[in-house]
Image 1: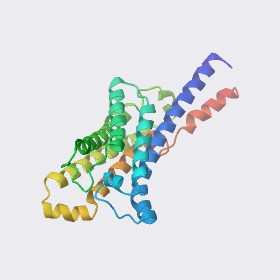
Image 2: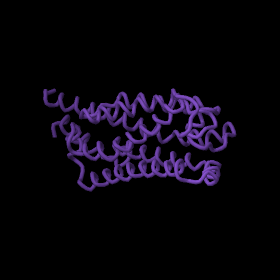
Image 3: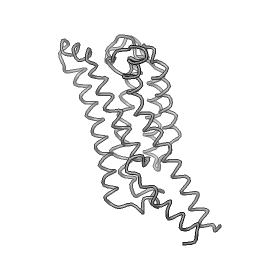
Image 4: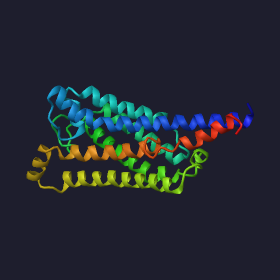
Length: 243
């Protein structure tokens, strides 16, 4: 086995481990609203809450905390390629853990908490979604051809890259749109209308959409969507067999 093959094999293994972390983040995020909403209703008879954070004060507390901690841990294990991306990763990791460990005050408006812990939760939630939008709009598209993955992506077509970048942009804009809509609901909507929206779980549904948007971006980056990782692996097989 030549040194060049060993180096290539090490590079392939490293990139595949990155893909696994990205997929894990995407799949865990994708499962969160399903576990809290439909599963919580089916198993415990819990109605749709005003927002995802309110599930902390229901029998689904352990699920909510566990999933957010898992996302935080996976983000901590993820290594970017620049100092700026490292800062983004640290912020998203800390905010995910903050959401899990600093619960929202029970039966409260996220913007008007009774405790410092509650305000920390609100701040962590906003930071979490903002950093995820930055990943989708800034880090993921920029890294399409400029990282150690360039070898793995060299066997893909420009059309594949355009499709993936489109997912990232749409995901990031969706997250920002959901954040803006939630902000309008909190600050601009009349109290009477807000009460009706809360009864319908409006913020919960907006958060569900935002979470699935970020999941789509990470699953795409992890090749669970637009899976083209088999192209370089086939090339590696040819090298092994001397073809």
